[in-house]
Length: 389
Image: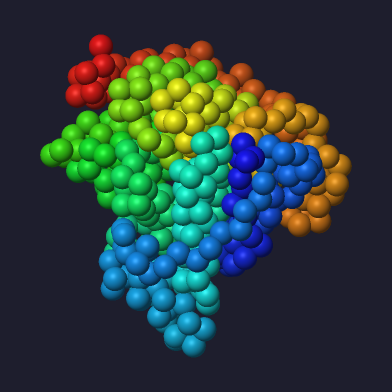
């Protein structure tokens, strides 16, 4: 069996809020085409597996029956409904579009296919690049997300495999939907590294949001300052996450891989690079093998520069597949990108620029001091609950 499976179908491109919306389906197409350009699927290490439609019963593991039925109803071409703000739909973040229900449940089904592949094969990781829609709530769409596929996947794994789950979210925006859905559940440990909600949507998930009742200590929120850069980010990861994962002893790691943390992304304000994602993927790969029975399910997420998304997720997938791929970008993909999005991408997979070099010493000091205090706060509040010394 291959080391890694990419869950993909061209039907994923139907999850489309329109040409003016920042979540552009072309980013998925470019990601898949870059992997093909690198001949990743010509090896025995990697395969492409199609998604399936999630059933209503599977959607209702997290979402209310009423919400699911309304999404289904409003997705009909002749529904005549253009806004339903009481459930988060309408012009703005989550515009209604024909076929929205099927497009959304295909994304969920892709994540469930990934989960089954990982749980039923000892050495296979899986990546659903269309997934990671982590903001949706049980009865409401939010932040470009109709159905919350990471939360549904966690509930599915709990029900089908009785699995203990660590969820690691590296999107610039807090994984608030997953956080609140499992806020009282000690069997799903949620970890979100994100730009602080003081400056960015959704405006929640601060360091003192640590879970409630039996779930106290099982929600770990790490709100970072704007302009946080690679070295500081990796320090936070290294000091907090491996000890918690080791103490929790998960059966599987779920990992939302939003790359809107990239320094060129038009929405948030972080300064990560593709080298950072490479380092993070190497760390999560190691954690999955050390503490989670080799089981790692990855989802996509944010990222609003399509060519950056493609380079980033291709880098992550190569690590999942244990493949070394060149830094030089194949020329045929550069041409395709120019044709599809009318911009010329970098000719290297990794970033040439170090954005942290532009920070003033005072700004670096402020970020470092804030982060040290944040690490200490989390160690003080979370570590004792898990008996971490």
